[in-house]
Length: 592
Image (cartoon, rainbow, N blue to C red; front, side, top):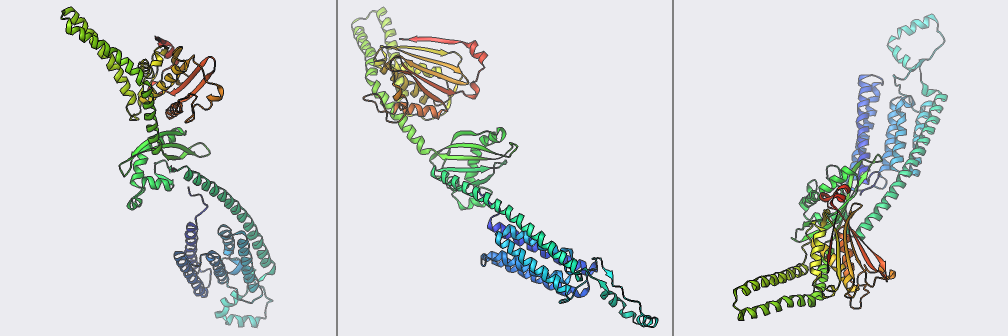
């Protein structure tokens, strides 16, 4: 995000605009005061117009220097000094210090405090003071003529009365009467007390203005420096984490975004000519609903999104949208923090599929045994049918054959679900049904044949949102670990319940348990307490649960077994009240 008092080009444009505004106002005032209001004599028109022309030429030169980027280092200082010199001459031809517009010296001091350093601002104060003092003292001591500004109050100079004959002589010179009156005016600029008072007052006001404006600007520049440093740190962090950020206003138009956003969503030069790139507009449309929710609720939202890149490949992004608020809590913008997790998703899919295949290989012997039993039964029955043509025996045999074939179909169906790569399609998941399917698969594992599996599944349990195959993989991994830890004997208890707004699933066994020192490490990759373990099973379990915005904990001790507690968030449509939950009750099922 751009954090700056004013960027250099904005400062130059603003400075040039002020100069042209001053030029227009000066020209209008000169024509109005001299030709319309008659507050100045006509003889001052020509020099004042020359000064306005010089100011206009100075503006043009300044514009050329800015456009061609030459003499930029001292451009502002030189233009302010030129303006002060022109102002001094304009004041000379328009009443000197009797003209109240001498306060424009103060305007240049304020302008220099904004645009220049503290030292240069005080230099402008000194130059302004020298110019104003030179003008005032030169008129006071008659070094230069004083031009009368008629709007300023003047008194007449009183002379000793002349003789009657002299009076008649003066009456004869009626043509020179107005000229004599003009020279007999009492000008304030010719009174030392007034002149020195104005000079000292101007010095005090300009010095105070310079002091306050430079201190304010120093504080603002310090705050700008701190903000820029924070912005740079944030930019480095985002670059290091390969994260893009996008700031949207209330109309969901991009206010600011970094280079990664440009790389991901803008690849065509002609797209940048529009209000925002087409690819970026499509992305904003994808995440727009969540951004609107953030504007409405004022809270942070996070989710995963996917899009098809220009190359035709599917991209996955983790998006967190947070509000930017006013002091009163009103959200005026939102910021999207975007991370490309395409590679992570691919690795996850590969790891999950690999874990499934490892589990499938572990179960292969037990499954072969389970399928071998019905095959042996089928073979024996078919052999008997070949020798026995009794109709009643044939009917009994058909029923037996159908049952054995159905049994093999269930086994094959469960195994095929386990070995098939997941499409990672999110949907509504029935946790109780997934547990039942898991138990059907688990029953064919040779280690589970001698274990007692007890389930306590709460009836009417709300639905969860997730990938059914991945959740089944979690349940199967935990169940297999439990039956292996019990060494072909013991009890595995699986309980589901709704607690504190979460779906809670507990897997409890009475096997060998996990020592406390190992509990902190079991979710790390390639860490295993088994002699032949690969160390990826529980790591993948933890990763899948986190991807579903859930939590998993392990408790127990080395003597009394282990308990894995899983918490999964509810799907929005599946929430039920505590009253309904108590009404539905629980369902207890025991498997052996």
